[in-house]
Image (cartoon, rainbow, N blue to C red; front, top):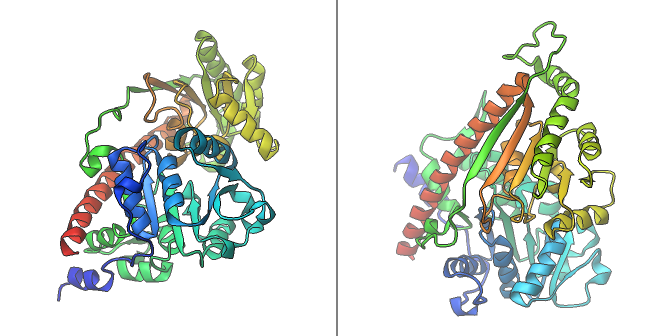
Length: 434
């Protein structure tokens, strides 16, 4: 018996925990390919939907919730909670209530809360749970990750949704599998991975068997053609990435050169000493197009404060604000009540829809591709009607950071394409075998 055949027999498919629904039971507003995904996820019962931004993930998870349980709890970032309530009401005619604790759950129905409130709910009351923006599971030893997996372990039906599943991220894949009870982390690692000096990596012949198994509980889609449907209405306008390299003179010493930032300390120093120059360049970009909404991303509090000083009327959504005030400001920008929004990726980069905005600036950049991708996809997502221009404002010494993110972007796109192709092939095999 070959190793591939051994793995095929060992981890054939994840069992079904849901029920069969007819496509006609799904709300007619959903496209046929969205309805197909919903029906598959309802039948699977414990599923992951990895749908790129703007593909209607919110509507699909709402329909899954309606069709999967009598009493369903959706868990999401706070601002996304309020956005979901509005989308459910205005597009699907569904009543979804935002609740802060178990005492506000009055009976069967669709309920939604934010991540910080999870421990206030009794999971035994719910027969279905949706984890929106499930990339929170990426931290394998994080308190939130452990809480979510443990807290909802006995809820019979579960859905995990994200646009960035990190297909080459061992931690995130194993955590999704564990949250959905498809496999424990230990069993998944032992079946498909080997550990060496570089960490965990796939065994030589395990990629296709793993994707085949994953296809029984997860579905990745970048565009409708991934499921064999036309891309009509889902062809994005252009995306222009504009480097804005600020030339500054620094008192350079030691190894702090353009090719070597000197590690974390060197990076921090460069970022501090170029702060004014970078913020002034970003403010000038905003001032040059006074009629445009702008979304400005910062990594430091001082960057955000300085931008707020330089850009009249700009609103800085920062960590010291209450959760309710953050949500109000983020939704205010979505509604056009706030013209220029300043925030950090950790606060505002997940789940929010800002297709009305086609101008963005990063005032500094981290090495996180996921953060970079999610930030851009707040505006550059299906539903956007104009080309999006993204300015990357860095000092000349930080070129290598931009190059590193670009490399990660290229690698992630390649791996995601492979994941989609393998999952499509695996679904066909599973259908033929059933």
